[in-house]
Length: 165
Image 1 (cartoon, rainbow, N blue to C red):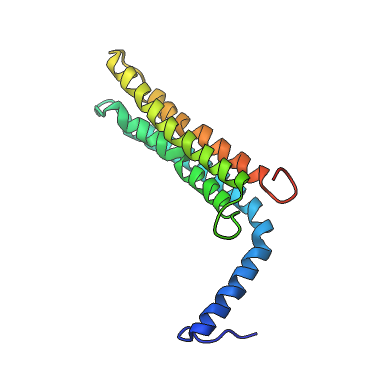
Image 2 (cartoon, helix red, strand yellow):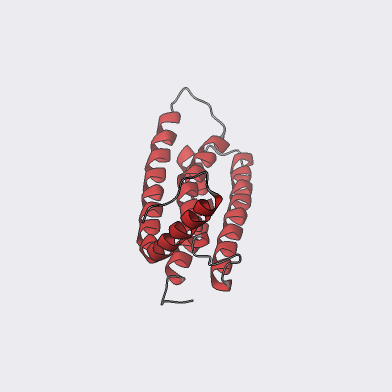
């Protein structure tokens, strides 16, 4: 079947239906890919930001602790976004299913709460006056998105067809 030219409005609607039908057929195949890419993004993010943290941690550099905390935030943020987008991709129609909505709302709330709590932890560590190594601030930053990423990954696994929802 050939699709009409892009200037034809009926052709665009037909093309959209064909593409959405093929996307619905591939929906079950996307779950392993979404999990795979989220884990790959987590590993690349962790290794890349660890390398960046060690590279920035030179004896002559005097960077504020927030720099290392932000590097930790950046480690799992892309992996969390991929997992959340995997949850959002499971919506059928205009509104998401209640179980899918619960997972991405919990994950988003955990991400927001994690950033707020770890920011307070970094401030408290900085104001204590003790010289903590940059790796501690990096770990605190990683810990801010870790629960949210786990919740989103569990949601992707739980809402797959035939499991929990």
